[in-house]
Length: 592
Image 1 (tube, rainbow, N blue to C red):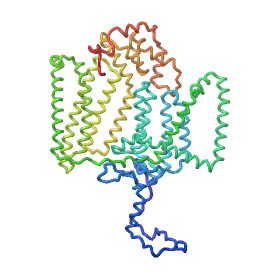
Image 2: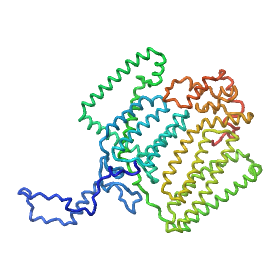
Image 3: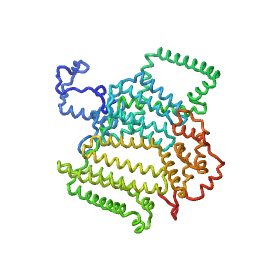
Image 4: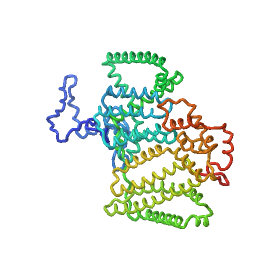
């Protein structure tokens, strides 16, 4: 699969210097008595024929904006007025010709994806999602090869990254990093199929797989009909062979399971437990897997070239008009950063004397404002680049100097925001919201570094580099186990300062990933924190393919050391001392 369609998927082009003798024009039929020309009718002029042809072709182009300077949306792929199997519209002009007939390898892989989706995905998420995704990727690979597409480095990067993200559900029990990983894996998989490289291409291409769902289903149905008409005997033989193999497996498997208990346990753990009551849910999963695999295969064979949609650049501004507001903004950033340095050098005793706030309250007060300042700075940079002067080398130097300074100053703001969060967490403990916004702020800093690098080395790879950084951040966030980090930080804080207390009421709602850290707590804090997790882990019969590594590790720990007591001590721990990790304000409100 390549970033651009291969030669096999492009319509043939006629050379403008081709010999007219090689392409003879069809001769008009000789006039007959029934169709004799009327001498009273004059021959149409050549100009009139051209106008008539344009008028006849006008309805086919109705409703589509014309490319040009007056239209900011330009369709860079597909011939004007060209038609294909997908019909008119935006995607009709961006999509290459219809792919070849679906191959048997693609059909069987798509069918295997649908069957495993129905059997494995109904019990939860774990390694089963990765298994289904690998089969769908194989279907896309076979379809791309049949269409003549080649594997390119960026395609492999997107594909490997998407599959790596699906390792998060297999390793972590927490639902929120799993959700982020699954959504990011879908986006990377869609980019692998479409090969986008521009800003709009990367943005729309990450969701472009939805556009291939209906065409993919139609493509699959047509391929099955075409192949079934000429090979009914082979289909019958295949069905008979499958039925005989299934009967043999059921009969001898039942005999062996009844003869040996260990073999029965092995079969019970390997074979999905499918009941009649789960029928509608399994049918839905089968249809979902079938449609998703067909959409992936169709997009791999005939990808929509989203890079063909472009936005015309803004009108260049004068140097003074463009640079003066940004220079003023840089001076404001510099003044704020100078004050931050004074605070760090003078200590927080000076801050308490002047503001009446301790260092944790001072940190909490400014983090969200600095996060919004970072986001707005990125928006300012994007708009400034759109209307930047583009007259020559001096203009390029001016743009790099002004925006580079703004990026460097914003990086200092990012560091200040992260320092404030660190102080606040050290005082009040780590929570899911705090670790999430801190990770977001850290990623924004990475984006600023990439923008600085693009100003030096060029912005050709900037859209894809930012997409890779986002996917890598989601992957690292999931692999680091945020629930485990939250539990570890709070336990270490409790061990260092037991007088500070620990928020059992919050920790008991964490996932099984937090069990190794919570297991170090003394009693009765340990049992109170693990009581709900133990009930969820030990009293649920989840199959191996839907069990994460974090859940399996928690089950092993709790089986060796189950919780103690009947929970009466937990009421005292839940009401004595602090809640949510700190003493609430007078109004009881805290933004995070």
